[in-house]
Length: 289
Image (cartoon, rainbow, N blue to C red):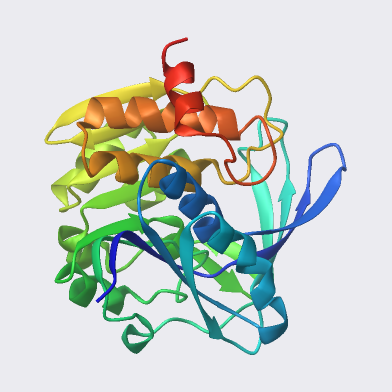
C-alpha cells in the first residue's frame, strides 16, 4: 500500500487573471498545484487527487516530473475561474466561476496511508463537509477555509459562513484562513482573536494569512513570521503555498521554525508567477537574511 506524507485533494483550475492595471494572464492553477510544489520541495512525499476533463489531463504531467504522484479522475469539465484584482496589493478581487469539475465523494479517495489529508477546495461543495470526519480517522485533516466559504451563485463567487463549522472543526488539525475568511467565520476583524475563536471551536492549529505576515495559533500560543517579497508578481497562490509548506515542515519541526520556513518560501514564490520553483536551500538562505 502506498504511503504519503500529504494527500492533497481538490480541483485544478484553468485560471484567467486580470490585474488592477488591466494586465491579463491565463494559466493552469488551483490550490493543489501551488500546494504540491511547496510541500514536495520541502521534502514531503505528496499525492495529488484531482478531477479534470480528459483533454486537460496532460497539463498535470509536469507535476510527476517534480516527484509528485498524481491521480486524475475524469470529469465532463475542468474547473475554470476568472479573477479580477481590484487593488495593487491584490487583497481584493472579483471571482467568477466559468466552469466546474465534478465534486468529490469518499469513494474517490484511494485506500492509501497518509499522515495528512489536505482538503484544498476552490469553492463550497467541491469537497463536501461529510468527507472530514471519515478522513480524520485515516490521518490529520488540513482544511483551507476557502473551500467551505466560497460559494457559486450563478457563476458569481461569494463568501458565505460555513454552517457546519462548529460540528466539523473538532476533526480538523490544520486550518488555514486569510484575514477576510477569518472574519466571516468568527465575526472578528482581529486576526489573533479570530484564531483563538477558531481554536476554541476545535481546530488545533490555526493559520491566518495577511499581506504583511502569517500567524499560526498552536496550543494557545501565537507564532508570527513576515512576508517580505520584493514584488507581488506571483501573489496568486500565496495562501496555498504557505499552508502546504507549514504542514510539510510540521511533520518534523516545531511551530515557530515551521511558520518562519513557510513565510520565507512564500515570500520567494510571490516574486515570480506560478508555483514555487526554488529549492529548500533557497528558503534556508532567505530565513537567515
